[in-house]
Length: 292
Image (cartoon, rainbow, N blue to C red; front, top):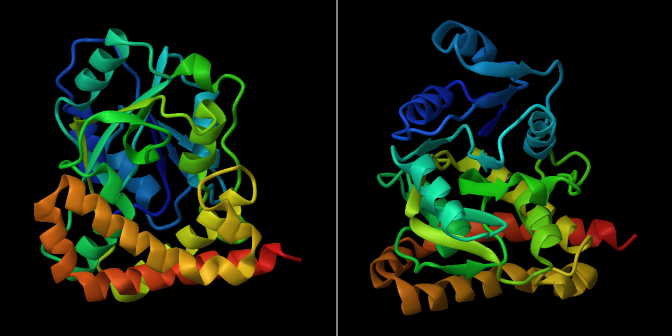
């Protein structure tokens, strides 16, 4: 199990406690890759002395941190979550069971909203994780968020996490890595019973900045592979259409699969549109930059 960490002092404690409390009999290992400069390293040494931490001298993006840990990991499965997530007590046991039941390249699960009392946090959750919320059906998919995903180790042997756009310090690894594994085919298993809870951003500046960077990475990934939406990345003048089209697709998805989430989506629509605008601005910025 691998957890990349950068300046996560506020959330890493809950994350690691949930991992260490896993209800599973199998032998497993936990690798934390930390490149923080906010005191997270001291917290890890003080509160989690038994956890193996791979300290990095300089800031390391999530994909590069995962790649570093892969060189140390020894298991036949490699599970990933993030420092701002809390995993369910049966998380690892369910991942193992689904991998043993069938030979999927990867198995992942639902991402629940860890900030339900926050309008902005709930809007960010709906925008970012609407395809993989607890109310979505079990199915085969082409890709899933890396915060709740477990690969067979041999699948990753010849594939590396790829760096994102320069300066963004976000990596579109959950897009590109899954594309390298599946070629866009629906081969990864999504099981909504395998759950993590994600702590979304609740402050305006942090949320807008984060979504802007994710938008940049999303566009950059589409210049590297034949991902859905590549046309909008390749033709920068079309890129402003991506965000409103994505909002429309979210609404249609919720109509089909989760009417309760649809009501929340409608109630939070102004905040969702703000999040979408920040993401769309990043996508358009990268599309414009990439044309040169």
